[in-house]
Every structure is written in C-alpha cells, then in structure tokens.
Length: 89
Image 1: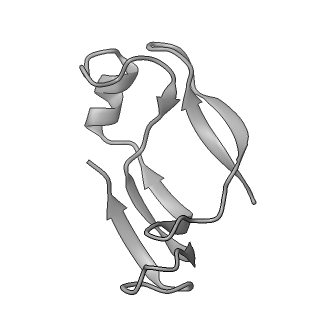
Image 2: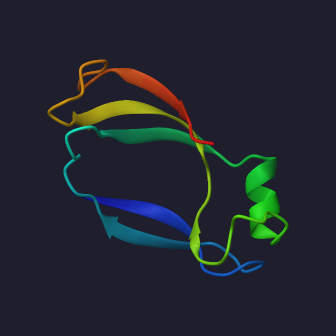
C-alpha cells in the first residue's frame, strides 16, 4: 500500500510531498486511513527549529482523524472501518 506524506527535509525549508510504502501493521499496531491531519503550534515550532526534539528530516502533524484500515493480530479495541482520532504527543 502507498501513501503521500508531507516531509520537512530540513528546518526552515518548504515541505515536500513524497509517496511512501506502508507495511502491514505488526501485532500491536493499527494502520489508519487518515482523513484529517492538523498542523498545530508545536509543529510550527519544529519547522522553525524551535523544538528541541526535532533534529532534521521528518513529518509533522500529530492530531489525526481517520478510519481504521488494518489491525495487528493482538489488537482488540478497534476493528477495520472504525472511525478514530489520535493525538500523538
């Protein structure tokens, strides 16, 4: 499966949209089809190099709403088709 990702190649540079491969989820993982992903103020700090934990290339956006696409074999709390939100901080 493929997806498009907004990559920040370096601090203070424009985002680049790249296509990447998605693997099947491991036993404890959930894979989402993202419908909405917001950029919040902590992401802006990362883009400007003002966030100590960001050291170069990466993706931003950690407030997500989507639909469960696949689950690992040990996941019991959601199933494919469930609508979910995630705040990864």
